[in-house]
Amino acid sequence: MMSLPPYHSLSRLDYLLLRLQLELKKTSTLRIVIIAIVLHSLFSILLIHNYLNYYSDTYHSKHSTSHEHPDKGKISIFSKPITNDDIDCERRYKLIKMDFNDPTVFGPNAINLLHSNLIQSKQLTHIGWFSDHFRWDEKIQCFNNRWTLCDKIFIAKCKPNSIRAIYQFVPFKLESNVRHLFFSLRATAEQLVEQSHDGFYGMLALIEFIDFTDEIIKLKFRYESESWSLRVEDYRSTKTIKSVTIMLACYGYSGIASFTDVRLTSESAGLDPLFSAYDICSWCSFKLTDHQVKKSNQFSNPEYEILKMPRYEKSISNHQITFVSQVSMDRLVILEQSLRTWNGPVSISIYVLTNNSTNGRIQDWQRLYINKKIGSLKIALEKSTIILVPSVNPDHYPINVLRNLAIKMVQTRFMFLVDADFQPSPNLEANFLSSMNKYHSNYLRQHDMNGCRIAFVVPAFEYLDIPNKEDPILKSKDELIQLIHRDDPMIEPFRLHESNEVHGLTNYWKWYHSNRPYNITYRFHDKYEPYIIVEKNSYFPMYDENLFNYGMNKVMHITEMFAANYTFEVLDNVWTIHFQHRSTPYYTDFLKNLTYRLRNRAERFKVLQRIIHQYDVLLDQCRLRN
Image (tube, rainbow, N blue to C red; front, side, top):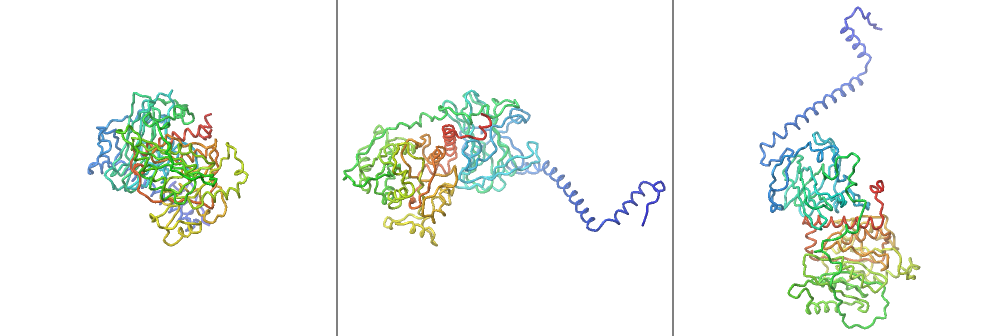
């Protein structure tokens, strides 16, 4: 065995080399390979790190001088457009000097009034980002930049013909007297393709004041920008701000858009480290005056008249369900198709567009036309009510006001709440009462006006093509299922491809095989909006009349029924089918008009806040502060 000579007879270097030689002789080949791999990996990491640092420092200068767009490849700081009239066109921004050392905006103690969480569909809350039917992705990404290390990124898959957006609602306490706000946002879109002349991606903010006026500001990005760009807005007002609704959106593009570092700060928050957004925001408090609409939209006490019904013979049938709906006069033809299978009473509000030349009054020819259409229906006129609601405003369709009027006129115990373009299944009333006798006999026999909190879900389907009037009516559930599952289906669950969450809780696969009613499995879902049969009693909540035109009017009513502790039971032996027809202008606005969508979602948040406080819904964020 080789031994080391005395240390004093060797130099220090010779000793170390000799020692290394002895250790290598003891080391296996595998160990040497592993050590080499580790050293190579460490060296590679150092090279990559140095390259990224160099790339981050030089990328801006490489690209900004050769590209025609000034924000390409660099952090760009732009303010609002030079002219307000240019807000919806190709916008020109002026470069401003923003002090990144301003502690009220960019400082570590500046309070961001926005939450970073995406609200899940099963959460009954108005705190955080609410997404439409198309969910956004989110991830944490780390940056080699001075403005942040790691931050959450929201990712949208943009479509050219519909809006993709998420929203957040920030209500302020009046005593906070908020008048000065800072908005900031960073975004990138590496592979975004413009497919519309009015395409947009960025932020919109609806600022509402205590005098019921409002203003919308936009932070728009250019789609050619491939790096993270910044937009900021220093907003000042002479009026007290009541709330802000933020919308991150893209429209008119195909591809991926990403957003991060979304901030809303205010001087009212200050820099006190013990201060929080809840000290100036009213998520956890509510006053009735907060839930009011503009005077111009007030429609809670509309003028209306009851249509004189055609002559009828008294029916020997004791009907217990009323078909409840609303429709505009120009779409009355829809009722001829949808009510072919209904012989019970109806309560329908008809919106009649008038003009100023008649002082907003309904004309005789309009009454005659409506009377003729109603007289052709095979309904039970004895307990039916037709309400005529005149209006001179073609842009405002008070859908929930019309629904509430129809509900108030119901003369039966149960109501079938449905849209006018849905056809009930044959013998729906008889099948419903048969099911009630079998599974809820005690409930059916009692007639307590306080009643029971059960909503009976009628599964909804739709024709893929417009059927002919001569086509036979489906007579049984088996016939319906055959048309759904054949090779070239004629019928499918309603809005299956547009948004399967709208009726997802109904659980269609279970319904196909079920021979008895069943309860839905989830306690709440913020997209669920089934058509229901429900008892008219003191528990039943009316529709919120702050919602009008298209969007959120029915789903928020179902949300309120969830909050009021209604249970939802799916009926196994009835259904309703939607008929295809031309879209209304309100629906077109909902799909493509950014400001319309933003205003609709702002109303949705205010309705939800009212529901949460009216029914004492406990929110985790508020429970910690009570």
